[in-house]
Image (cartoon, rainbow, N blue to C red):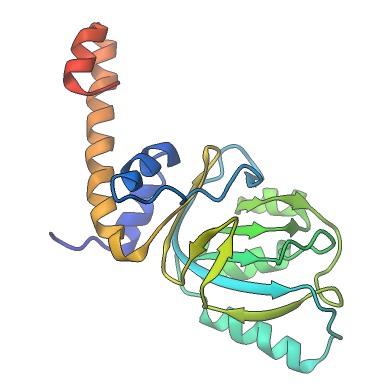
Length: 220
């Protein structure tokens, strides 16, 4: 199998809906790859796809200072184009972990979306930027003084779903799913088959095909 480029995979996965991917993953006996109903896009047309850049925050207050600032700067320096930042906030209900400035930094680095299990700040300005933001609630509070960044690029768990650095994130209005990096190329090939089959099915419907014909083709 010819290995597709990351850009090709990102573009293709953004065309497919999560339900089709979960159907494929169940064929690998992976039944728990959906992050759950709490996650929503800032705008219905937001879509995200790419390898995960994981972050874990813990709910221990830490004073602002140069050490913390350098740590965040080091994290940003490790971001690469088409990555998807994913934050495990430790279920904090009092902090906003992502805002307009981080979106601007990500866009400058070729990153157009993020997934936050927790609060997001500056929603209007993020929307105006066109950033593909997925989150669980809006919160005006700064995370500093309320939480601290414990680690990045280490495995995290969100709603009992394991997310390792480099696992592929795919999200849209229909939900967010995690594709283990070990099988991402195989899933990508199967996604192409789904896209092709559904394109043919749509044309068959436009041409007046019966339900029986669609079932025989496997298009329903």
